[in-house]
Length: 125
Ligand SMILES: [Ca+2]
View 1 (cartoon, rainbow, N blue to C red):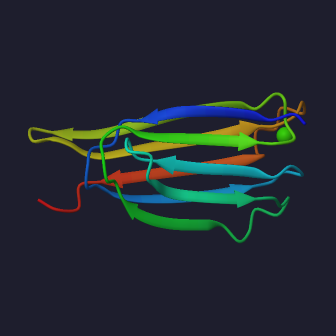
View 2: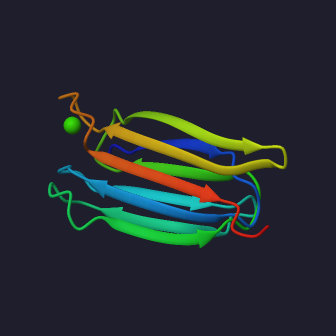
């Protein structure tokens, strides 16, 4: 069976409040997992729907620096992920860090098969 897995390192500090918004418009099942450096799973959702609603929204606290995001699609052999990130930095460092990912799991290049937004911020001064 085909299985394509992609990983992205998330540069999020420890003990930041993290909000993950995820949806799919895909015929394949897509899994998104976020783990800390010790391998503790902080987010783990599988979705398979062509309807963008209902959207998954979950929160957690980052329990280490350098979280690892893994996207896997068991039935795709060509998972094409595009991503960007954004930071708000002040004199005391990174206050807010965001990532947006889209994925194409086959060949029609609509890039709406997966949409994920991760927003993390320093919730304690
Ligand atoms: Ca597609």
